[in-house]
Each structure stands twice: as C-alpha cells, then as structure tokens.
Amino acid sequence: MSHPTGVEGQVAVVTGATRGMGRVIALELARRGTQVVTVARDPRRAEPLQQQIKAEVGADRFDVVPGDLSRRDDVLAAAHHIADRYQAVHLLVNNAGAHFPDRRLSVDSVEMHVALDYLAGFGLTALLHDVLVRGRARVVNVASDTLNDTRQVKLLGRPRPATLDLTHLTNLSAVNPKAGFKPFEAYARAKLLTVMAGYEAARRLQPHGVTVNSMHPGIVATDIIDDLVPPLLTPFKRLIRRTMLTPEQGANTALRLATDPQLTTTTGAYFVRDTEATTPPLTHDPAARQQLWDLSADHFNLDR
Ligand SMILES: NC(=O)c1ccc[n+]([C@@H]2O[C@H](COP(=O)([O-])OP(=O)(O)OC[C@H]3O[C@@H](n4cnc5c(N)ncnc54)[C@H](OP(=O)(O)O)[C@@H]3O)[C@@H](O)[C@H]2O)c1
Image 1: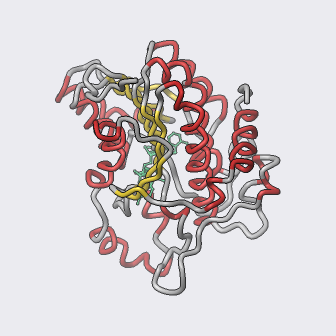
Image 2 (image 1 turned 45 degrees about the horizontal axis):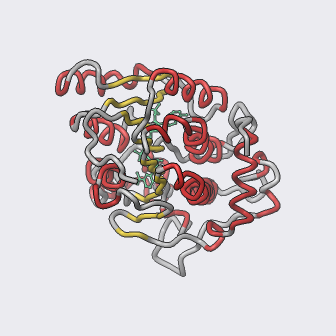
C-alpha cells in the first residue's frame, strides 16, 4: 500500500503547540502546506502562533480546539470535534507533556504524569482511529529517553531504566502511587507507557496503513527543563540551557518521523533523535501490553 509522503494539503494534529517543540513542529508543518490542528487548554496561548502562521502562510491553516489534555472528557470532546470537522487526519503528533514536581491527581483521579504524558496520546490515537485510517496517517509519540535511564544526574553509576509494577496494571489510578513517589521516575514511567502502548498501537494499526512511532528529541531548552533541573543546579540553569538543543533542533526528530519519505512504512519503532533505539524488555511483553491497552481503552469507554 502506498502512503502519502508530501504533507501539502494534509491535516496534522499537533498537541502542545503553544510553546516549546510543539510550536516549532506546528509552524513548520503549516509552512509546508499542512492544515494544523492543536488542542490547547487555554486557546489564548495559541494566539502568537496563530498570528505567525497567518502572517507567513495564510489565515486558515491553524485550528485551535479547546481542551485540557489531562482530562478524559476534554480528550473525548477534542477527538470528536476533530473527527467531525476533518474527514481524514494524516499526521498526529502527541507532543503535549509536562513534568510535575510533586504528586498530583487529574480530575479523573489518575496521577498527572499518567493522565497527560501517557493517556492523552493514547486517547487521541484510539479515538481518532477512523480519521487516521482514512488519512493512512503517521502517528508520532513524543516520549523521553528517561524511560531508559531515570538518573537525573548521569555522572555516577549505571543507567536505571524506568520500572513498572505489573500489579499496578489492574487500575490506572494505581500507577505512580503515593508510596515511594519520585517525580522524575513517575514522568519516566508515563513515557514508558507511551512507548509500550505505541508498540501495541503500531501492531493494531499496521493492517490499516497507519504507522506509529515514538521518539526522544534530545535534551532541549524549553520550559519543561526548568522543572527537570535538580534543585542543586538551579543557579546554573541559564548556563545549562545553553548546552542544550534549541527547540528547533529538538523538533527535527518529530518532524522527520512525520514527514521523511524514507520512513513511510517504518512503524513500531523508538528513536533517540535520528537513531532507532531499544527500550526496556517490558515494553515488548505482549501480556503487559495487552493489559495496558485494555485498561486504557476502558478509561475512555472504548472497545478493547
Ligand atoms: N525538553 C526536553 O528536553 C524534552 C526531552 C524529552 C522529551 N520531551 C517531551 O517533549 C514534549 C514537548 O515538551 P517541551 O519540551 O516542548 O515542553 P514545553 O515547552 O513545556 O511545552 C509543553 C506543551 O504541552 C502543553 N500542555 C501541558 N499541559 C497540557 C494540558 N494539560 N493540556 C494541553 N496541553 C498541555 C503546553 O501547553 P500550555 O501552554 O497550555 O502549558 C505546551 O504547549 C513533552 O512531551 C516532553 O515530555 C522534552
């Protein structure tokens, strides 16, 4: 089956486009002739990008759907809105994400990293199924290589991959529990779930011509970094930011996965920047993947 390669005239859903890498991804896709749709919890924050796209490429290339992606009802409403308005979606970049410095619960009683960094992308991918199939879409999940190493300072010891207690996979509210909660590990675990469900989505969607890949963009100087710099290093934040990739450089990985003609049929992969990389064995465990899929589908009242 042939897949579309040029993005002109296509529809791309890019979450988290108000700032950081998402903004660059959305702008670049609009410049290449794509109709870009984002979901923003405060649509006013999308106005600067709306103005820029208007000035550069024309008024009607950017559509802002209101929604807080940490809330199940908002994910459902945004997906229905998009599916009603667009006959087909050709690209879905699940980019919105955050690191929370303490344990918080979403309105659905799910820990916030799980709600935003994992469930939002799962929900959009599953709920947009029909329009993605019509667009023979590429889905790109922005994960983080913290899933391969949860050490915040990597000077000592060996990489410590994210872990997942399988007994927690009976109830999403049990993932990232209060006991022993460590914010950075909770963030990494949510990204692990993203990759794990991404592999499963790739398997399920392959017969329909939809590809699903996950990626780590590198360490990029965006606002999320302010939460991730360990307190000890806070005085050096500015200096540290200068050693990082720019949002434009960071956006390249997602843009490549979304548009490179050479990756048209690549699916079920995980990339660290330009290089395909491995993820912890658990992400490939079919039983665990199925369990995660079922739980997540139940969360959105979807057929498993
Ligand atoms: N920067 C890095 O070094 C790095 C490394 C690995 C992975 N990542 C991942 O890359 C992705 C993009 O991050 P970034 O670095 O560009 O961070 P960023 O500048 O902080 O941007 C985060 C984006 O997510 C949106 N967002 C946050 N909470 C939301 C919610 N509840 N509902 C809807 N949108 C929400 C934000 O919108 P608002 O304007 O409304 O807050 C913003 O547009 C994230 O998934 C992050 O985990 C980043």
